[in-house]
Length: 460
Image 1 (cartoon, rainbow, N blue to C red):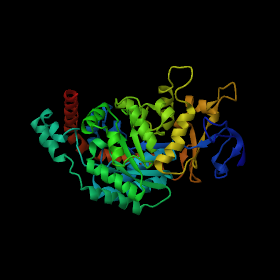
Image 2: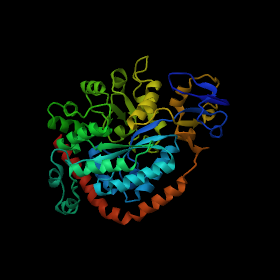
Image 3: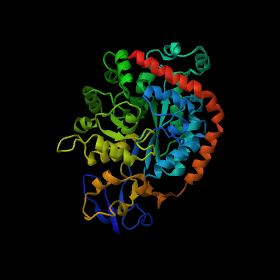
Image 4: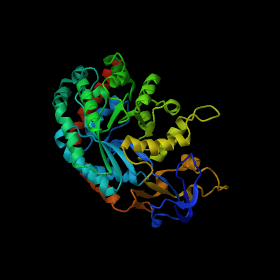
């Protein structure tokens, strides 16, 4: 520990009181300011790296399955620049590490795009876990794919949309691409993971292959699981024993696996995930915005599995602020009893230690510098629990410094190695350059969304 007058260090939020004027040796003195609070930087454990956020390209919140077709309107931009803006936005709020679920479905571009994303993370200075997408099943609609939607589309809309039905690469080719990304990007700041999009979009053979190669290469898996009620209904039909039990039967469940959302999980399934050492990443805002529901975090706090927190590209105020996401979870899951169901310590443990586990990164080796003086500027007492102050008032705007792996990447609220506004303007210019294509495709994308709504309305 080093001495630094007027600085508080909160090594384990919610578990230990802040230390005054004693700081970790790896934090440079020039990164600090009087009245600051230093703590381990939280981890964004599930995201998609939208440099242009979904609402900005017309992807209005809706039920998950109806919302997905509007992702067709995502502008075509440089993957490096998009990731640079997305990762910079996170770093500016004090996030030192993120899970990036890559969005490309073209396996022939995966290695090149992954390299661009990894370069962006390196230039910003954050740690990165890269979930490489894998899928081969049921595009557009569960239980039968595009043909199930055909009768809900006009002949004209179908003729426009049919050529865009995904044609998936062979399983061996998809796995090969992930392993190539991993081989070409061996770096302590990077962890490449298998990323099956979700069991509803993966054949049994693909899931079984991923389980085998994950064990063979000791490589982690990051997958969406049971996000929406419609996924629950379809997967219950497909797997009479239950999808979680099926995944266990094929050796998919292990401490190498993290699943995102899990809103529809039953208690016995939570027990099984906990028994197998699986981690779950909760995304409270995304689950509410896309009408999936509320994950059973208090149950997980009592019984497991361990959970982390992610923004999923659709945070509460659409500003990619993990601090506000933590506040939402804190209020949403507090319960109605005199004793809280979910504590601040539970959530900071999730955001710091379990988040690091999901990313396969060392825990609590990165630090955020918070303008704590601004948070308590009107306080009459100086001994209010710092963790409770953070839960009530902290936002990304109060994050003024960030140190990752001993390297200072933000000071006084400004990134040191990246010109964020210049990058954002360049990305937006690229996106606007793609507007003619987007305008031409918008009608068919909206038609597909309407057909999807009609299909699931009848299906239910």
